[in-house]
Length: 311
View 1 (tube, rainbow, N blue to C red):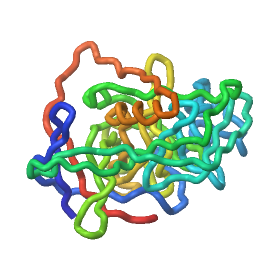
View 2 (view 1 turned 90 degrees about the vertical axis):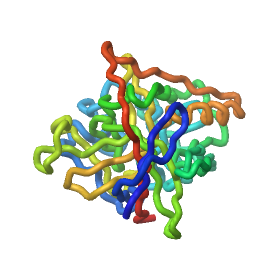
View 3 (view 1 turned 180 degrees about the vertical axis):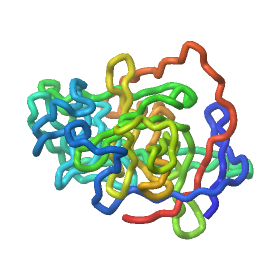
């Protein structure tokens, strides 16, 4: 199956040729994320149940706004006291967060609004469709007396994200690390010759010595598998965790060297701010710092036409 290759010019995205590509949504079977060298002492957020793991990869950071995976809830990442980031193709009816006292708070009655992606279809026509990035809304804001803290959204030009370290959560409250290889526009096919869920994404390959990949981060290297949809991607900026997006899809099959795709919230910041303002809320942001010597990144980003697999 072929996909369209896309270039980014300013704030628009437009067609620039053809490239091969196939992705699968990471929505369904219940498996654990794949690691280069899984270590429960490092990669499991909890020792058992919801007991915090003091040797977890992100221990020491405020994770209260990073939703927990339970038997009835799925991925969510709080960005205001009332709103969170999730994936359009896998939206949970309830979400749970763990406060600073290790008390679980579960919220039901959540609703979702999809962020829109506008792009040139390659013929000069601008197309707008729902993306895989959705903003979930709680029925009411979490009280300030509850020690659950929203995360800021990591923002900046896409070129600044390339090469940055990404912390990736999957099901079963596990997390690892990866490096952002590119920022691309991707979509899945709708089964009728068209596309759906066109989404600006961060792309990170699963690179290990055992699968022929290069440039990985060692034992913590993580790749997505079925069931990891809607869980969180984050980065550290100035010592603080910042939201990047929610898991979307994979291209290829583990344990080979393959690509993983997660929504890129920075691209949708204006839409997010407009939406949450309707409830009197606002999101905070953290700017990805420019390197001391910035190499200008040219060339194409790619809208890959992805084959849908799974529910």
